[in-house]
Image 1 (cartoon, rainbow, N blue to C red):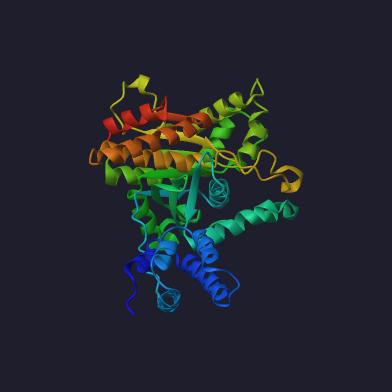
Image 2: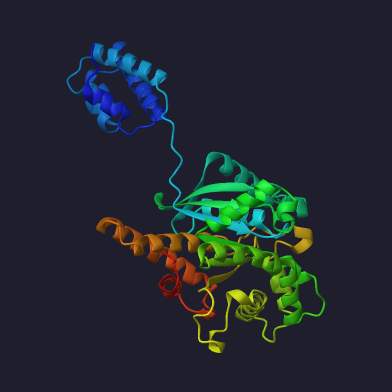
Length: 413
């Protein structure tokens, strides 16, 4: 007997196989009770009416019991032999690359960021592919076990890791992006290590829509003098002098600087040390001093345009983002509570810039323009409320004004 179109549509019109099977089991049970005389046809119809939508209409809209059984059997056989379509990988809208020396905290950042975002922040969630979801979930579950002390933290990256993320708002897609995390030693080994991996690193950097530079906050623990110059020397020696090489190569290829976020990890350790040098022990004073140290350490990204009037070097758009797995996580031999700080902001900033770039190209439909502008406004609010510092050629402002200036002065689009 030919299967009715309504039944076929009901069973496969957007429903998952598991949901269809569950409904079939429910209807089969109702039919069996009807056949055995346990319930009347009227009661059977009432119970079926509790089953949602097209399933009810398709099966009991003019069909007799025997026909329903045939359809159920036929549909069950189709479901049994049904093969899930091969899912194509998501179209990559943006490409982000993370750069930092070994031990700088890139892996812990990814763990804390996913911990924070997978649970949802202000309606936003981050979805990874199944394999990376399992890996990152295991990492942060281990970090949650503070009885392990320092062993709660994952080992550093010993090979290149690529993550595909889908940023969603109330489960609706906002932006896709690829995040590439390279092992720290490659920045110092260059071609003397793995030449193929090194060439791929350079290619990924050249193609990146945004670069994330990781400064190990633990280096602030490596001085006893607690002066601004000493902290700057350590940051330059442990990070900036290695990173500048790759930023310079990027400009040779692209004739511009990419948007850059300098992520200072282990901010809890940074705070402990900077508090020893500031006159006023406030959060604002500590962050202001950190910004000054980073600006001096990466002086090429924060030019003093008052000295030359601008227009000499490439336009730079840079953010300083302190992050931490918890303000007290290093206390009591690293048995403190996991309570991530600012872990979501780097992702929000990258997504905001990707959407802004897409909007300014001017090739979106009116409906998509409205949708994109709404997404920008929501992300912008989260970024501004975090209190991070953003700079365009060394001058601070809001992310929208910085982006307008950056894309106007550079080939950002």
